[in-house]
Structure formats: C-alpha cells, structure tokens
Image (cartoon, rainbow, N blue to C red):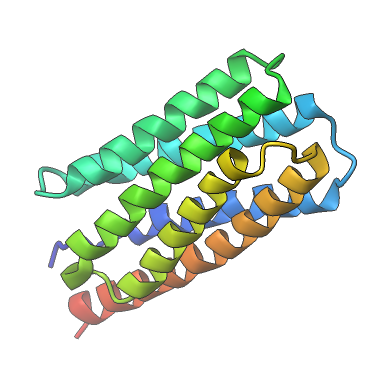
Length: 182
C-alpha cells in the first residue's frame, strides 16, 4: 500500500538529524565567530531546504504539497544567501535567521492542519512550528542580541526541533509498517 507515509518518513528523520547536528555544534562552540555562525546556519538552512524539497517532490501531486515546496525554497534561498555572502553583518544575519524561522514555522503550522489526517502526531508538528515562529520573532524584537545569545537560542531550538521531528519520523515509520505489514 503506497501512502504519504511510505518510506518518506526517512526524509523527516534526515531533517531531524540535520537539526540535532546543528544544535549540538552550536551549543558546543559558545565562542564561535560570526563567520562560523553564518556558515553553520547557512549549511543547516541549505540542507533543510534540500531535504524538504526532495520530500515534497516524492509526495507527488497532492493538494498540500505546495506547503513543503515553499518551506524548502525558503530554506534553500536563505541557506544560499548566507553561504555566498559570508561578510553579512550580525543584524543582517539575524534578520535572515528570523525570516527563515518565521516562514518555516508558519508553513509547519499550516501543514500540521492540512496533513492532520495523515500524521500520527500533528500536535508535535504544530509545536515545532510554533517554536519556529517564536524563534523567528526574536531577532525582530530583541535587536541588540550578541552572537553568543543567538547561538544558544539557535542551538536549543535546533535540538528541540530535531527531537520533535525524530518523534514524528518514528510515528510515520510505525504507521507505515502497520499499514504495509498487517
């Protein structure tokens, strides 16, 4: 039985692993320079965007696929911009981080409602989306933050989001196995 849940759970797990890896590196290196922060965030956003676009493409033509397409394109765009303009000032980098997480969070929340019948844990996906929106708002509300504070916030968020995404991936995998191996 081919469903949305079929081996596509692995793409959700890849997103989780990329997020956890970024979170661990960000929290383990508290004295990171701005250029390293830009590179780490750019690599994370780029990887997340690519993984999301591949997952969207593998879904085929479905009514809500555009949510994943837009989320992936935003991640890809922000990742490329961050990697190709490493001389970004801290305020510009913070705004890019904020925009990325605001848009990603909004689309994650929308997807959690649109895909609710297909997800075992739409609430977990919603919580991840809300966390993204909150983190995305921080650079616009607290403009005087230091690189260290941004790094700790990004690291903590990435770890939490990675755990949520891993939970969703395991739920998808379990459901897929139940449906295909009764």
